[in-house]
Length: 115
Image (tube, rainbow, N blue to C red; front, side, top):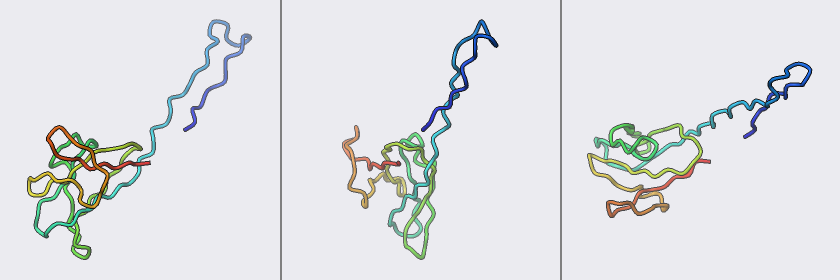
């Protein structure tokens, strides 16, 4: 990421101010991340995690009949996020993701890193 600076004021143009102004860095580009999980058709399936304050109903996943999976796409900034799936009110770690960390509930949260 580059930070753009404006040119320093010269003494003959501005006497009282000789500071360099730094423009704010552009917001980090967000990446498209698709979450998928196999679950029976007709379930209420959501993805919850650090990216949505662990809200168990913030991001409903859509059932994709041809693939037999539930799917949700989010735009996430670069970083590492913990998440879980909520299936009919039951929280579960991602069975397809070996990256996980213990949580304060005595279970595990799945981990994804967005670059």
